[in-house]
Amino acid sequence: MSYVTIPNMFGGDVPTDTGVCSDEVIRAYRALGIDLQKEVHEDIAANFSAYPNHMRWILFRPDSNIDHRRVPNLMVFFSRNGTSLPNSKRAEDYGPGELVTWDLGGGVPHIGIVVDRKAAQGGRYMVVHNIGEGPKMEDVLFSWKITGHYRYFGPQPQR
Image (cartoon, rainbow, N blue to C red; front, side):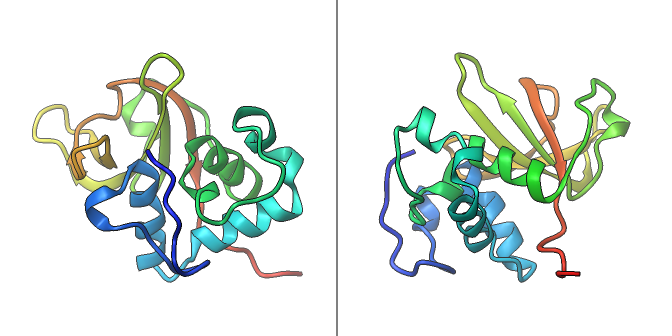
């Protein structure tokens, strides 16, 4: 993933032919009318120390161009604003619309969305993700070490 300046602070996007795994998640939520880019930015701005920005990337303020594109930030965001679900080795514990994060090895994070189509072999729900070859729907749920499992339905109304 490379740093790209996004022209519109919210609702902007990198070119679709250059996106990464987190961009697929952002686009999926945007298609549902949820601006995850905005939601992540606002939560990071209000709770900067809760995010790994200052430790991992040595940043001192939120950056709306990149914060939502970093899987560790999404993991914190979904934990804070959605539901963290247990990691499991049972396929039936993962359902459509849920988000899964992995460690690809060497601490390289990855994220995908479980979808409502099942693999021909094994009968598991497939995952939409992008691992550098564009978006794909594949049976990859257990291909790497799972590091997170989440549900997020968008911002909750203030009470």
